[in-house]
Length: 368
Ligand code: F6P
Image 1 (spheres, rainbow, N blue to C red):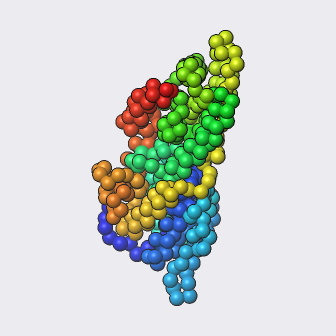
Image 2: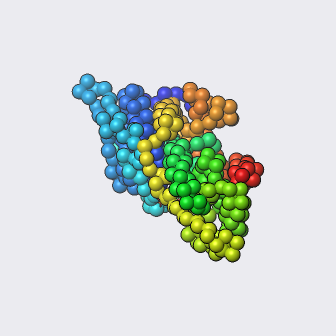
Image 3: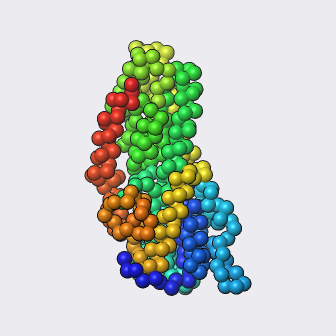
């Protein structure tokens, strides 16, 4: 990345795809750093749709003396979940025509750079736009699923895990009171990370993830096994965490397991809880705010230094990317990020294999 400071005066930021706690904190950081450098920051509303349609909101304001200040609402929203500039999954932006429209809007308004906060689909869009438009674009990983390559975490992952842990604690209380088993579904369409990480944190008896490729019969058998052994050991709570990526609905699994176990445990009671979008909302945790702040700062710095078609990643200090002034933030080209994301999802990534191997080892212990 060339280390020449660009004299940018106006940049844009957008949030796209599923929202995640920490997006507002990243917008706040981007706006604050922009303002500190005399750069006006504009939010494109409803993700790429607003970019194409020219719907923007200024997140800064220019004071009488020419200084750039941060909008007070942006400042306050930084501590809240969701995204104050809205988000969407845009079908139109997947087409070249839509991206050309977005380029035109950016150029017409004198917006010299763009920061995209989002997950896999959003960063794919950012990569295409950067290559086709030649405009400087930097991505910030934001997705509760933790399925983005080259980064240890993404905005929202920590908060989502805290929400799941909190919910499972509540479920465990009532489960123990009635000596029941629960199958709890957590979000994660393509990636079982939330299920795996939370299962360890709440000491669930089993975790069911798409990556293991189990059939319905095998899933039911896995639930029945932990109920059987758990009750034999005197447990009062059996908790199974199922990732959304496992296509069989929770209620189907629960009904089939009850039927299977009826002859041996006639009184067995299993309940299903789908946490759904509860997991995606809520005020960001300390970690998500801190990561958002540091990634937001790094993203603006990268833009102003002429960086483009890259993502700021949260990583422990040593790892092979281009080091920034923040020891935990590194820059990776979007092409590499997207390639690693693909392999995380299709299971060929060493990271996914390591996660699975670890879960396999843990599964015998979790059920104890
Ligand atoms: O943002 C990722 C995610 O939360 C997935 O885990 C989930 O499958 C999906 O979004 C749900 O999307 P929507 O809110 O559009 O139904």
